[in-house]
Amino acid sequence: MNLDTSPIAAIATAPGRGGIGVVRASGKSLAPLLSVLFPGATLTPRHATYIPFKQADGSIIDQGIAIWFKGPHSYTGEDVLELQGHGGPVVLQMLLGRVLEAGREHGLRLAEPGEFTRRAYLNDKLDLAQAEAVADLIDASTEAAAKSASQSLSGAFSKAINTLVEQTIGLRMLVEATLDFPEEEIDFLEKSDARGQLAVIIGSLDQVFRQAAQGALLREGLNVVLVGQPNVGKSSLLNALAGSDVAIVTPIAGTTRDKVSETIQIEGIPLNIIDTAGIRTVDEAVDVVERIGIERTWGEVAKADVILHLLDANLGPSASDEHICAAFPQGVPVLRIWNKIDLSGHKPGLDVASDATHLYLSANEHQGIDLLREELLRIAGWQQTGESLYLARERHLIALRNAREHLDHAAAHAAQSDQSLDLFAEELRLAQAQLSTITGEFSPDDLLGVIFSRFCIGK
Ligand code: GDP
Ligand code: ZN
Image 1: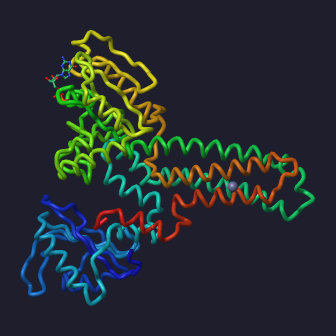
Image 2: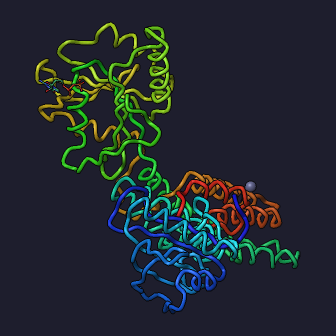
């Protein structure tokens, strides 16, 4: 991670062709850059100016809109220049090249991933949870996830966390004030209702945790692996599951073409479905290439939150099904789905057996699909509460859990007869420190590095 604060520039729009594309620069002072790029012109802050973008020799790269944001009134809190040109990869590369060249003598360099947002964070334009929400909003794969990310971006999650921090500090100050007057310690907890205040804080924290944990589901979704012999109805089941929701079909990053993966959603929760058509076990592989493919597929199976093992209710399991079952990883829940009950005469239903949960349905006739949807939501841990959700990350949940633990310790100290107030105060301090890592008040640099390096360049 680059910690120097020299001016930076990057293409801010997605690669590929588009109606417009944006090159963005940020720096403590971009006035010298402006005078090189647009000699003689004066750009009014936050006004769009239609202007030619020219090479050093005066030839025109493109005509577009320049917007000048004088710091601190900008995304990063520094001077920001946005050049909107035509959205072609070559023209944008030329424009970026020109900007870098024009600013080189003032130290302008290419931005690293997430560096604009990191500067916004360092300049107090956003706290850390909001900065993460920028990336989450961009990455959101469902409408519900986008909605929650934008909630966090607007500061709703940060506000909830800050309220918890303030309540904790308030109680801690009360306790610490008493520490200086040992004779008052004895009945302090009674008089101040410290236990009651602590219980209120714990109650609010639990509430925030629920909203965050449910929101995390919207972000992470459920990794579902679909296995089954050809023709048992895997594609039909996917369509039936996606139902009337618009199935958003997105390739999962890093997956190869030999594996079909798509995302559908149930109540806004993305289900990342990996269709392992014709999966075999490694010892059945005929050559090295197939072996590698199979190993990769089993790697996906190992990462699954749930395995849907589809069988034909009319034909029963095949020898290969038995073989595959034996190879399923331990600990991953398996739903054994008997499809085509319209042919076999079974009734739609759910049967929890010791080896797996068995589900009887018909993808084509849409019988029993609701049971499957409910079962998947149950496995995901989804509760329909109607409260607003925060698109939390794993690290937020961990911090909330740790804070809760320290508050529990504090409660335990308060319950003891000797009522050790200094330990009580210390636990409050630790809880507060945990909560503060969420908004980034006390966040180590390596954490910042990890968070911002996952952004794309130009963000
Ligand atoms: P896949 O190869 O596992 O993806 O199977 P498909 O979804 O392509 O389905 C194979 C065939 O089974 C198609 O002709 C489907 O119409 C049929 N099929 C799928 N589900 C059902 C069902 O519930 N009942 C009946 N009768 N046929 C089904
Ligand atoms: Zn503790």
